[in-house]
Image (tube, rainbow over all chains, first blue to last red):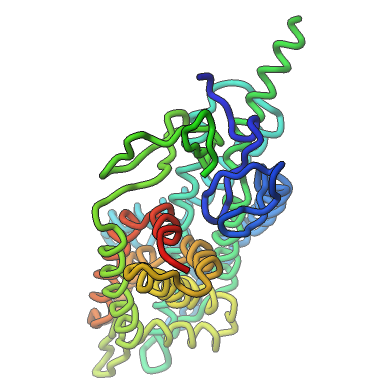
Length: 212
Length: 207
C-alpha cells in the first residue's frame, strides 16, 4: 500500500482523544465530542504572529538587565550574558555552559528553526521531510529549558533582601525573557507538523503537472 | 475506531500517515510511525495501576515541596530562606506580577492540575467506572502538561545555589530534595502515561 495520508481518505484524527473519524459523517468526534479539524485551524497565521512577537522581544530580553544588585559598592546591572560570564569566571564551567545553551543558544535556535519550518511549508519547498519533522520534535522538547534564567532570578531576588549586605531586584529584561519563552512555546504549539508532509505532497503533484 | 479493509485504522498525529493497527497488538513497548518516527503510543504492563501510584507519590512530593523552604542563606548570622510561594510573592512586590504568575503557574499550578486530573481520571477507571467529566478533565491534563516545568526549576535552583555560594553560606532546604524526587517521578510518569490507554480504559468502563 502506498503511503497515504488520513486526510486523503477523508479521515481526521481527533485532537483530544486520538480517535480517527470521517469528517463527512460527523464534524464532531463520535467518542469525545470535540470538533474535528483536518489540520490545526489557521496554524501558519497563528504561528507566524506568535513568532514575530517573540522576535520583537528577543532583543530587549538579551539587552535589558534581568537583575539589579544594590550593595555598598553601588548598583550593578546583570544581563543574561553577564550572568553566564559570572559563572564562567567563578569557575563553574559546566553550569556556565548549561545556562549559555538554555538561555542564549536554545531561544535563538528555536526562533530561527521555526522560521525555517514556516517558510519551507509556505514556499512548499521540496526535499527531504524527515529532517524537518525531527527538527520540529526537537523544538517541542527543548523550548521549556529556556525558562531556567527566570527561575534563577526569582530565587536570587527572594533570598537576597534587606537583611543582607546587598539587595537584588528583578530587572525589566526578565519580563521580556519570560515572554520570549512563553511566546515561542505557543508558536511551536500552533504549528501543525502535518503541514510539512502535506505541502511536500502538493509540490510533487505540481512538478508532475508542469512536466506533462 | 474507523475500519478500512476490515482492519481498524489510525493515523500518525505528526505526519497524518494512515496506518493499520497492529494485529496481534503488542504487549509491551512503544509503537512509532514508520514514516516520521513519532511515537504513536506506548503499551506497558499494568500501566494505569503504576501511573496512579506514581501520581499519588508526585502529589505528596509537590505539596511538601511547596510548603518547605527550597534554599536558605546565612549572612552574618542572619538566616534567610525562601519557599516557591515566597519567591513569587517577592517578584510580585518588585512590580513583576507577570513573572510571578509564570513562576507560580509553571512550578505549582500546572503540575498540580496535571497530577490531580490524573488522579481524578485513574481512581474510578481502576475499578472499572467512568470518572465524571472525563473529557473536560482529560483536556485540562492535556493543556497543563507542556507548562509544568519542575525539571527546569530544579536546575534553576542549582544554578542560583552556585551563584549565591560566593556571597554567603548556602543551605539547601528540604524542598530541594522533594523537587529533585518529583522530577524523577514525573519523568517515569510521563514515560508510562499513555493517552490511548486512558481512552481505552474509558471505553471499557461502564458509564
